[in-house]
Length: 381
Image (cartoon, rainbow, N blue to C red; front, side, top):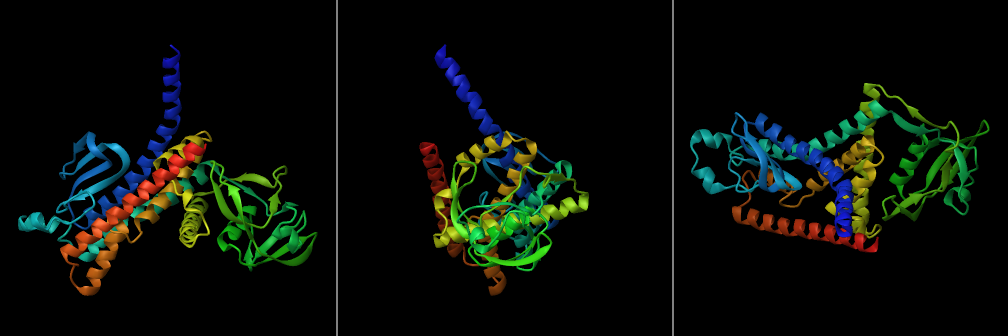
C-alpha cells in the first residue's frame, strides 16, 4: 500500500513538470515547422509530412494535398519532410530527384531555386520570433504589464551606485542620453551594457544631478536554482508604494511591447552566448529538456500568462539556436545556400555529406552536454 502511494505521488508530481513542458514545447515546435511549411507551400514546394515529435506516429491524417500531419512519440522537436528530401533534416536525395517525373521535379525541394530554398529554411526561425512577439503582446494586452516608476528606494551599501553618489528618492531621468520611463528601463539598460560606464541624469528634489556609474558583475540566483553572472549597480525600487502598478495596453501599444521584449531577449541571448564563448559566463547554465521541464512546471504555478511568457522566451532561444551556422540546423543550410549563391552552383554532394556529419556530431555533443548539465543540477538539488 505504501509503495503504491509513493508511486502515485511520484507520478502526479512528474505530471506537474511534464504537462507544462509538453504544452510549451508543442507550441514552439508547431509554429517553427508551420513557418517552414507555409513558405514552402507559397514557393511551390510539396510537403510530404508535418510532424510534431520524432519516432513512431501516435496519430495523424492526410490532407488533400497529400501531406501527412502527425503527432509522434518523442516530443523533443519536429520536422517537415519535403518532396526530394532524403530525411527529416532536408538532406537532398539526388537519386530520388533524378527518378522523378518532370511534374514531380518542379515540386521537389532540391529542384527549387536557391532563393526559394533559403526562404523556406529561414521561415522556421523567423516564425519563432513572430510567435514570441505575438505571445508577449497578447499577454500584455489581456493582463497588462506591471511597471514601476524609476525612483530609487534604497542604495545597496558598497555598491557601484553608492560609490557614484546615488541617494534614496532620486528619480532616474536618463541613461547615456536615453530617456527612462520605468525602473525596468534602467535594469534592462544596465544588463545590456555590462561593465561599461553609464552617465545617469537624476532628479533630486527638483534639482538635476549628473552621475557616472560603472556596473559590477555579480553572481545572482536566477530564481530556479541556477547562479548567473549579471551586471548590477545596486539600486532598489520601492515595492511598498504606488510606484508599482499594472498598466493596460491597447493593441498597438501591446504589439510595440511585444517587439521590444523580443528584441531585448534576442540581444541578451546573443550576449550570453558570447559571454559563454569568452568564459565570462559558465556553460553549466545551458540546460536541456529536463531543465526546461523543471522550469515549465515551476512557472506554471504562476498562471497561464507566466507559462506563455516562458514559451516566448524559449521560442526566441530556439529561433537563435536554429540560426547557428551548423549543418543539420537551419543556419547550416542557409550557409550552404549562401555558398551556392556566390559560386553559382551547389557544393559537391561529398562536401555537403561531410558537413552534415560534422553538424550531427556537434548537435549530439550539445545535446549530451545539456543533458549532463540537467543531471548535474538534479544531483546537486
